[in-house]
Amino acid sequence: MTTGVFSRRGFLVMASALGLVKAGPWVLKGPCIAAPQSIEPREGKMSYEAKDYSRLIGMKGFSENLLRNHFTLYQGYVTNTNKVTEALAEMHKAGKTASPEYAELKRRFGWEFNGMRLHELYFENLGGNGQIDASAPLAQRLAKAFGSLQDWESDFRGVGAMRGIGWAILYQDDLGGRLFNQWVNEHDVGHLAGCRPLLIMDVFEHAFMLDYGLKRADYIQAFFQNLDWGAVEKRAK
Image 1: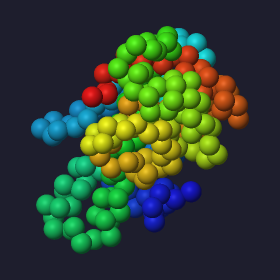
Image 2: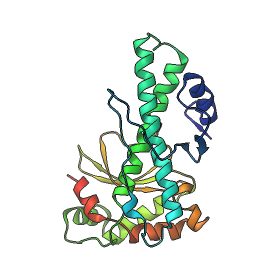
Image 3: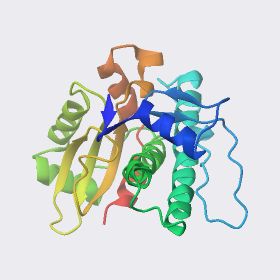
Image 4: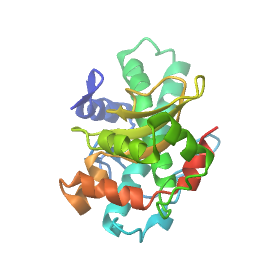
């Protein structure tokens, strides 16, 4: 599978030449480049740091092995976001913005950054008891937009069960105020412009196959049972 016009394997070849990745602990894993768990600080430079989501270990329906693998994959996005950011800045300083390498890295940045941020939102809306307060503002808005909370949930589950890999996302249109359940196939493609992601469910294979194989519906059920609706509510405005 390719991302845009540039395959991930092609990116690895190019990135190796640019010094973005090195042989050793880096491996092509799932949809991204997985990194070792330690992320070294970059002195004198602004950089993103991987957040610690170990509090999620022990969630019913999610094995420790699956979660730790998922955390490592997320850490790879953080590391590569920093590496691509630095490489782009260096190429700009060197006057190389017209080069093919700059163009491909610029395209790649959306993949790495969105992969980092979507994983953070995903982990942060987990760890709850799955119970939604029907009297809460967001619950009332969902019921109004979809007819009932049950109708909203069935629609969101339907999006998550679609064939393919990607993300199921509940968006809020900050301009119009409407709520949408949306499928995002690639991190950097399909997002609704001007919309705020409120609830994120990862439906790439790495999010469930270690525990559920091809039984995605069972994973979606476990996801709903562990939702932290308080975190979701705080994102809505």
